[in-house]
Length: 216
Image 1 (cartoon, helix red, strand yellow):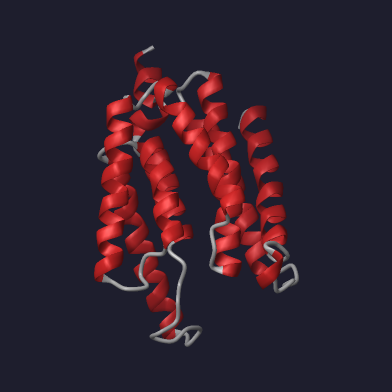
Image 2 (tube, rainbow, N blue to C red; image 1 turned 90 degrees about the horizontal axis):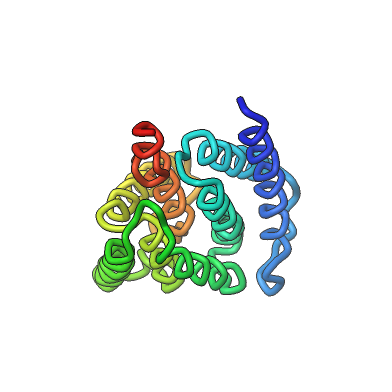
């Protein structure tokens, strides 16, 4: 393990834990001030592993790898707030959207056309799905999928959505079987979209420039 991988992993593990603590108190109108627990540790581990994974497999120029890590910062916080308060605050969403838009012309692995098609198609797909399955897709999920579509492009964003749906379905079955939730309980989809995007980013070699690195 290189020092850069270790540094990224440790920094984001700390940010994962901090994000979970922030989400327990902010936004304040629905804050429950939950104590440190298993979720704190799990989010820290997930954030640290994701950041370390991005650095370890990336064949991108250092600046582009850094952009992915910077955009991971609001994604971790959004995961925490959606799990805790069932919301995706614009104070975290807006920087993610602006950052993803700004990165489009400079992304070494995704063309602007593929990025735009990925974002538009993903928003349209989830929007139609939300009309069919009332309550299954929130407005915040549409704001979230747009920058994820820009980052992953077409057609990788649909792999991310597929993975998210699988994870959400499996989690729902486990929670129902353990009687943690009921049939009418709302389970936030945002964290699953983010997990699907992360898995896709790490799984598809071209998204982080791994093919380019091998050719060098």
